[in-house]
Amino acid sequence: AQSWQMDNRWPTMAEGRFDFGFAVDWMRKDLGLVLDEAARNGARLDLTRQVDAWYAEVQALGGGRWDTSSLLARLEPPR
Image (cartoon, rainbow, N blue to C red):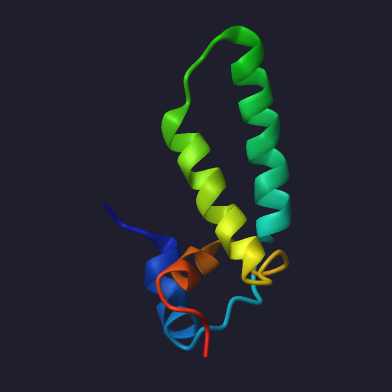
C-alpha cells in the first residue's frame, strides 16, 4: 500500500499547504464525466460518488485550486 503522495507530500499536507499538483476543480470535472457516463450505462459507482462529495466539501472550504491531497482539509481546516 505504498503511496507516492504520502511519501512525498506529508510535510506540506501537515502544514496545510495544498498548492501543488492536480486541482480539486479539475478532479471534480473528471469525476463528473465518470459519474455522467455511469448514469448513462446504469453503473453504480458509490465510492466515486462519495469521493466527489468529499471534494465538494473541499471546494466549499475555498479549496477549488488546491491539489488533491487537500482531502485532508476536510478533517482539519488548513492553518
